[in-house]
Length: 308
Image 1 (cartoon, rainbow, N blue to C red):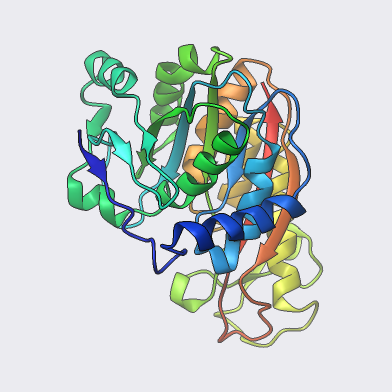
Image 2 (tube, helix red, strand yellow; image 1 turned 45 degrees about the horizontal axis):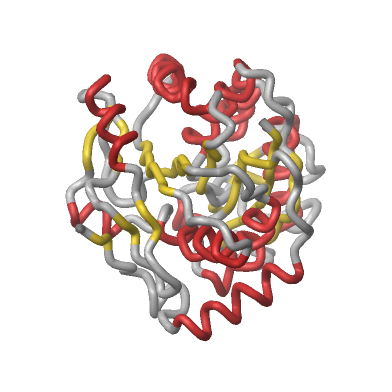
């Protein structure tokens, strides 16, 4: 039995089971209640001091009844690769609250079907990546507290992609999407703003029609930068709620918004659109800081669910 260690415990979130459990209890108690039929989720993957409350909103919405498996798709933060996605070779993901099982059978099925598309991460690659790990304590918590068996996960890490690739990945996942026993989670933060992220887009009015780059002029002649960031993110959320793959791609091309999980989210939108799923309901939105100067930076976090 191989266990992926909780490499970010003790730094990005508490490594103490008792303290972590109390924190999750606090955040989950403040979140809106579970929604019947909610099995499609969007949530952030930043450190809990920044995004814990927002991620709690995501997982508290999940309808845990009947869920046997969770496909979790997220971006690659440390390695770049083309023509494939990566998944885990481990049997379990460790959390301070208990281990989360991996569905090795489904992973074997995916690899057997297309070994060029579905590849296994190295241990170092898996343990460096945080986009899945940050969701695991919440996943374990909401099922255990409901007296349900913690479901097995299928992590899918996406790096380079384009429309043909995303459509191919969606086609491979569609039989699983159509099974009501499977939940799908997108692990993504929203806008990464600032020169250190290479993104300094600004809209004085909140409209995309006057979007400009502050690198050309660091002066702000309109709403505060943090409100501009919010306008960009809220437009992304509005467009995603149209459940239109085409519309979301057009938004990304128009704004180049640095939504790190935009590619996995695009794949889920394809699945939702093809299978006539419900639209996203957005639960919360926060930023790591309120940017007022060109020299500042921030990352945004959002939570959502949809019915399928």
